[in-house]
Amino acid sequence: MRERLGELFGRASAYLMDLRNQPERLVPVAVVLIVLNLIAISAGGPAEQVATTDREAADGLEPGEILPGEALPGELTEEGTVPGSPGARTGGRRGSSSSGGGGGAAAPPVTESQIKVGIPYVEDPGSANAAAGFAGIGQVDQKRAWEAMIKEVNKKPPHGRKVVPVWYSYTQNDVISKGASQIAQEQCAKWTREDPVFVAWSSGTDELRACLTKAGVAQIGGGLGFSYEETWKKYPYLVEHNSAALDRMAEFHVDQLHAKGFFSKCKNHSSTDPCVDGKPRIGLIRYDWPSYKAGSARMKKALAAHGLALCNGCEFEISYSNDNIAAQLDDATEVNNAINNCRTAKTVPAPGDTSTPPGPCTHMLFLGSTAGVRITLFYVQRAEDQGYRARLGFNTLDAPAAVRDFFTGQGQGEKYNNQFTNSLLVSYSPSSFDLRPDGYNDCKKLFTDAGETFGGSDDSAGNKDNQIPGYCDTAWYHLAAFNAAGPTVNLDTWLKGVANTGFIKSAGSFLMRTTATRHDGASAIRIGDWDAGRDCKCWKPVTGDIPV
Image (cartoon, rainbow, N blue to C red; front, side, top):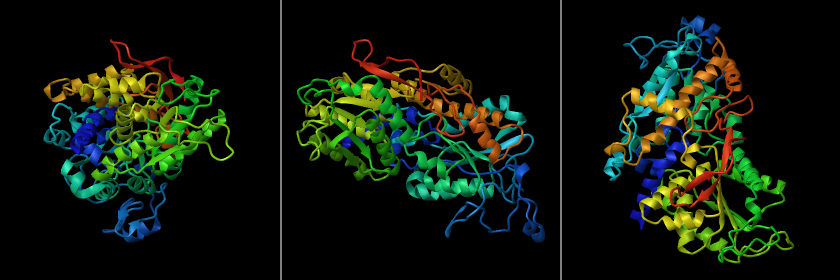
């Protein structure tokens, strides 16, 4: 059974990559699920804004240099993070540079003609897949992909500043042997001390984000379901350009489901009983991390605004792990326990509560199935095995299309078909509906022009098509934000650019835009019904783009 679940993780995760749109995390599928703590990028600052202090002059240092062995503000050290003012970024310092050329002093982060960007990539993204027997799950050449994006930006660089990359490369063995914390420290040191950059084309863990924020680093990265309202307060220079914060998604998810009458209808299956007087019994299965708790709170507030609530005892918290295999496999047991509770009459109202009749849950919600689509996969498998069919309300991060593809590959299409019938999907990702936005073809041409191949024997699952939008959206967002920022580059103008991007061409979302008050860029959704027809078996949109 454990081998079966391991295969299930591997097959499904290939498809979830498109939803995450964070290319540096597009690593071998088998490893993504077991080690979902791959790290992103780091720091830098503008040459025009170098802080020259009296101490520096007294020490005989060039503007922006630091004393040998001195920690840079925001740097991860053995003693902790060194405090520093994000507005007072340092410029170049002595040391080697990976941004080009030989040894000597590293170039400043920003000049009149260039801007240095920290970019991580995995050197061997297909190795673990091949070793696990998933050789057909293609992986793009990550460095070549980023080089193609650099070329795209540098055709018409914002205000004449071309991107100069500062690379951080690592292998799958590094992910396992070093762990997330050490990789975060290495990246932070690379891009804040060894070769400072102004912006990182990546997001990352909170540990890395804290370091970069204190060092005054802008970040452009995809979301993974761990960001929520508090994230933007802690890390004001971070942008997740083509995803939605989990709590914001929870709110518009409920609002859109309610608008389509989702909660007023039941599947009328014998396992759930019909809705009584339009009063559904709503359950929620979610992970236990802070973003999921915040999403749950926002979801319950949105339900209350529509006169609805989760039924008593119908919220189930799953212990989340990103690197413990046993704990990940235990998700199956925890999800099954939730199903056993919800399919029985144990979900009775609280004493004195007459708003929701007792009985099985009639509707089930999820707050994202981060880390291998585990909750969605386990739910569909176990619920159908037990003949329990609630009406399901999916969101982008639940990745129901990935669940369909997995069970199709197993010859078990009846599992998802029975579960998905009369359910709804609210998603900001066209791939949820087997669609490609207009920008996708432009994106794929950038890759084919760079020498990437698609659909061959090493890509029989078509996974490369799912990976490339995250790269292109990063490059296109960089162009929009820095064009809007104006000719001077500092953190204030960066925020000005973020606030004024306008609508941006996207290869991976219906609409990409950030504002002064919203740094998560997914800005439109569509709602889809499950179409079980012979020629489709897909989520078919029943609306056009709806702004959110």
